[in-house]
Image (cartoon, rainbow, N blue to C red; front, side):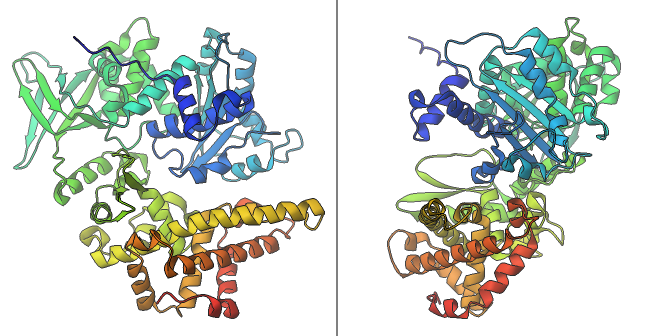
Length: 619
């Protein structure tokens, strides 16, 4: 008897599961609380998996981006990263409410940027969190993603307004071409959720590509080497839309990111597909894809591809799909697109990993984006993955995730690639936001963060076991300190609340001063270095000794020592924050991003001789 077909995931039901897993009871939440959690769910579980690199992988980094509240100017979430700004407005609707969404509300959202651009804030007052986020925006150059998500129902008039896009704003050149509106009702959100789930895996069944031919000419040309083959030909828009309809985001499992943000280019692709299909082939750059095995059938003009994935061309495929669906003439069917499919091996060897890394990178360099994915297959990342797999804590093996989508088994302790690099850099040199952000951190150039962390010959040689042990020690110190910081912050916030209620202080210090763990990691590292007289060899031995996580399994001298270091690091941060905010121009966000803050903290650590003497040595 055949098994019943598994029901498809729905946004509303999965949202409830997300809320339940966070320890909250859905039925007891207000609609405002449900709206806030709906925003968080959409950002972390739907948008981020599909659009890797568009928002931080670290949920703690996203906390300041949730700006919902009084004076939020119709913005629930705003994040700026690598020249791209994501703005979200959320509308929660109850179970039985299926009425159309308000065109007036969506129209008001479409004018959000004009309100946010109001420089002096006299006309449109903004709350503190929103003001902080706006500091990061380059209004003349950034690209904007504007998402209006609702559990209501979209209407034709709303869809028409969405398609019209951004209206001109005085003083903002080409703003109409730099903004993309998306209206997502419950049906759209269901589709997005399923695409996010699909994005977690690749296509495991063979994909058959039927290439176009002219007359008696072959349907493709073949480039062969001793190790692999590449097939180059033409594929029709009709077949591309069919592939996308069938496989959705699985088509792009090895692509660096789905949406690149160039709205004007996307619109031009769609316009050309609809109005100039005959010339589409000449205007478009084409599609690059990979497969682990390619079987050619010249008689049927077909290539049968195993583990097929498009590594460059997501914009072309999705734009043709959109054109096909939104044009009753189906002109996009007649488009022809250049296609190149290369054979790869997923053997896991360094050589094959380097080839895939270079193939993906060189096919995407026109986007001028430096993201962690470009480093995911290099020798450093492969060795980090292999070395961490040899470690365990409390019976659970460590899993270093150097690729975006890998096994997330509950029986393993997961370490994210970006989180690891940001932690180590913060501990050694300071938070990466003070040096250039994620692009700097994974930049392999002479002045980039990658060589700063791993050395000049890192790409050729990778890292040794001894170097890994020292890095792992830094990581485990920070992880333990992170949990201690949470306890200390709760304790200090309680003291602040008591003193605030009694009138002893005007504004709390603990909460804002201890909001960013990256600052704590830097002060912790400085205390460690100062305590051990900046003897690099000695400090390296200490970290190597702490590179095995067994010390974290039971109370001992290491835990006691790092707890004391953490408490004093918190005191230093609070003292500096208290002093810095006396400046009339003080902004909390600037305090966490200024190298002057690091200089003051470093100075205060080194002059605290009494405390340094009292701290235990780990040598």
